[in-house]
Amino acid sequence: MRLRLPHPLVLLLGGVAVAALLTWLLPAGAYERVADAASGREVVVPGTYATVAAAPVGVMAAVLAVPRGIVAGADVILTILMVGGAFALLDATGALGRLVGSLVGNTRRPRVIVVFVCLIFSTLGALENMQEEIVALVPVLVVLSRGLGFGSITAVAMSTGAAAIGAAFGPTNPFQTGIALRFAELPPLTQPTLRFGMLAVAVAIWIAWTLFMTSSDDVRPEVTAPVKEPATARDILMFVTVVGAFVPYVIGVMYYDWGFNELSALFLVVGFAIGLMSGRDLSTTATDFLKGMETVLAASLFVGVARAISVVLTDGQVIDTIIYGLAAPLAEVPGVAAAMLMVPVHAIIHVPVSSVSGQAVLTMPIMAPLADLLSVSRDAAVIAFQTGAGLMELATPTNGALLAVLLGAKVDFTRWLRFAVPGVLIVSLVGFTGIVLAR
Image (cartoon, rainbow, N blue to C red; front, side, top):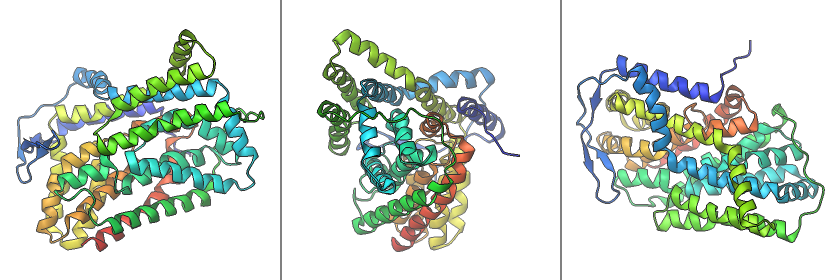
């Protein structure tokens, strides 16, 4: 009998309920925290875990955690709406259909297109942790994949999958590697040869896995065929305007501490620019822009509901208990074996702690000193975090952005796991190798 998971919203709400139940079953505890002047974040003080008064989360508090999670994720939700609205407006002009039709019609080597798309998204992942922004691109990616003769899983693999691999191993990714190195008290780009080598090998493996599995991609929903009309110069200009917005954003992330609010602002401008370039007036542009946002409204809310799980665990004072329970046994394991065991520990932690940057702040102040005690380099501890938390992005049901992409591509979560988990396990060998080489 084929296992079929419920609707993503039901799955996420179930996660909130399980988190609330854990606040009744697990002992409450907390680490001491101090303010980090450089980052403005609160940092865990290693060795300070202690039990605290129980704070179980009741039914009403658990329900209230859902809107609180949506509010906490408002910046991400707004980004999805803005980016989604801009791309939907571009699609409404017919430009995306004509461009995709031209791309499909002018290549006799569809696998080359898959490689090209994988490289684009892995680069964006490595530069700025691209994930939620992909939600808006799902419809056109599915049309492209179907036009190349493949299915929806291939569309997700060459976009979200490639971006997650690039994000996990990208040396310049400020939201994963950058924060982890900062809280491990290491330079911003330590061991560059090893790190860039890991990125290249990991992306190559994922591309090879994606191409190998195209023949078994049986998720092939009916989609609108690519438009046969040739793309115009205006189509290209509008597309470049939308995609080009990511260039200043990536620069801003790397050098000016930009975040999702700046990206939302960019795409607010881009949305109106696309409308005016297509010949619409301001009022019609506003109407169509808002209509485009409707296509990603449900997907954007998934991100907020997923955030509610962390809200419940934090309110119940058990999130530090989970961290402590997983990290403490590693002190009893010698050397590089302990560093390797950090990988599954980080993967497990990433289920309740769905934010990679939040997990880095929470765990690296614990794992980095632990690496010192085990005579393992702190670089190895950071690589373990990248491998465990970064790759778990493709397999955890608490990743709202992943569930939103799968919903848009009409791919069941269980079907995605059958594709993704073997590929993730193969790619994880890159991380384990990096741990050994970073000793």
